[in-house]
Length: 116
Length: 114
Image 1 (tube, rainbow over the protein chains, first blue to last red):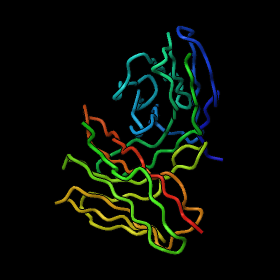
Image 2 (image 1 turned 90 degrees about the horizontal axis):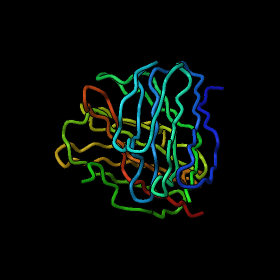
Image 3 (image 1 turned 180 degrees about the vertical axis):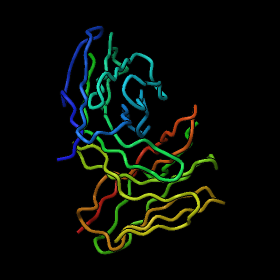
Image 4 (image 1 turned 180 degrees about the horizontal axis):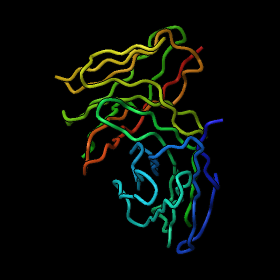
């Protein structure tokens, strides 16, 4: 089954304790992305990756790191989490976007993070 | 300043009637306009898209209309069914820093009453 998986689904942590949220896709997609969803703000992009070893900042990258060492995996790292990073996080993947078409993004089920 | 706005946080519609969800955008340089649907405890799933060169796209019960002069996008669901109850996000695709990216609206929660 084609899917994007995220782990963990729920996480409660404390300020300053490093954490990693994993993301994996089995569709051989080049493009992967991390979003956070906050009430009244929709989805905001944190980081994205056009392909292996190619990553770039989205709209709200502060406090986050990513890596893309393999095509299927795109972990999100919070080196020193703070309460303002409490949010619902989504990983997504797709074929590379272009001017002549839209390639739908496939989303993981989400990770609800609470930073105390 | 939000470039994509969904001004109705929620919408309640009787089963069998038409649901109309609206979205306004500010930048005329976007090339694709999208609707995603989200159920609780799941990620968003793609519903329908429309290119900036068209004004209508249909897929079964779902039709998206694009009014470029008004910078307005709408999704019509006819007839509405209980399974349509979900949060609907509109999103627009444009080019920033030479890459195609999406900007999302805040979402509208659609409730279909039996």
